[in-house]
Image (tube, rainbow, N blue to C red):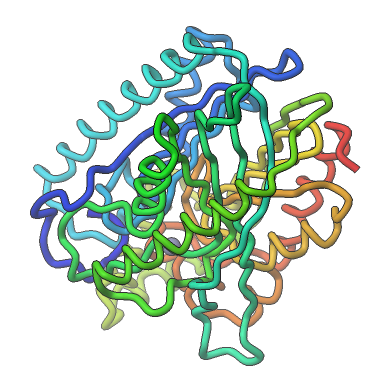
Length: 401
Ligand SMILES: [Zn+2]
C-alpha cells in the first residue's frame, strides 16, 4: 500500500472499493477528458504511456486529458512511485508492475467509453466551503494557511439532474493512517460515495487541491473518515444549490515548466550519507550513487506539468505533485477576475512542490520529502516564480484575464 513508509504489511483487504472514473466533455469544439483515480498518485511515465495510446486511438493530445489522483493513503503502490519509502521484494515489485500495466489499460478503455457516450448537457459552476483541513506545519510560526474552498462543476441534463459532479478540496487524504491496512478512498472516497447516493444516476469525481501542507483534523479512525466525507458532501450540496451556468468559449493548454533543483552533494557527499543512521537517507544515497554511475550526473531539474482548462467563465489550473496551499491562494489572488479552480496531484506526482516561503522554512514539505520521492534534493529558490509565471502565461494564451 502506498503512502506510509511506516506501514509494516501489505494490504489485508478492501474496506472500500477504489474507483477510476472518466468524464468527457465537448464544449465549443474543444474536448476535455478528466480521469480521476483513488490513488496516492500517478507518475509521468504512466501519463506518457497512456498519452501515446490516447493520441493514437482518439487524437487526444496532452492538453485535452487530465489524470488526477485523490492522494488516498490507502491505495496500492503504482509504478516506481516513492520507491525509497518502501521495502519491496522482487515479487512485490513485479506485482506492482503488472497492476500498473492493467490500470493503464483500464484507464484508456474508460476514456474511450466516455467519449462514445456524449449527450447534450449543461455545465454549471459553484463553490462551497469545508473546514476539516488544518495546516500541518505546526512547528513553524506564524501558522500556515488553509484554503477552505470546495469548487464544484455540475454536468447536468436539461432537467438539472446531475450526470457528473466534479468537486475539489485542498487537504491530504490521510484521515486513515498507517494502522489501516485495507484499501479505502479516505474522506474523498466517502464523499464520492455519499454524493452518488444523494444524487442518483450521477458520477462524483474528486480533484485534490493544493493541500500538501494540510491534514484532516481530527483524524485516525473510520468514524472520522465518514464524518469528514459527509461534511465534504454537504459542502458540495451547498455549492450545487447556487451554481451558475457556464457560458462562453473554451480552450485547453499544457506545458512542462522546468524547475531546477538546488545543487546536490558530490560523490563523496553521497558516500558519507550512506553511513547515516537513517535507513531512508542510506537508501536514497545508494539510489543517487547508482544514478551517478549509470548516467554520470543526477537530474538537474523537475518537469512540472501545468495544465489549464478554460470552460467559459471557469478556469481550472491543474498542477502536478504535492502542491502547498500558498500556490492556490496566490493564483486566485492574482487572477481574481476569473472563476479560478486550482487542483494539484494531476498528471505526475513525483515530489512536493513548496512555495518560496515553505522552501525557506524547510521541513518535510520544504525539501525533506524529496528523499522518499528519490529526487536529488530540495528545489532551487525559483520554484514558485517559475510555476506561477508558466501558469499565468498559459492562461493569457487561452484568453483568461
Ligand atoms: Zn502527501
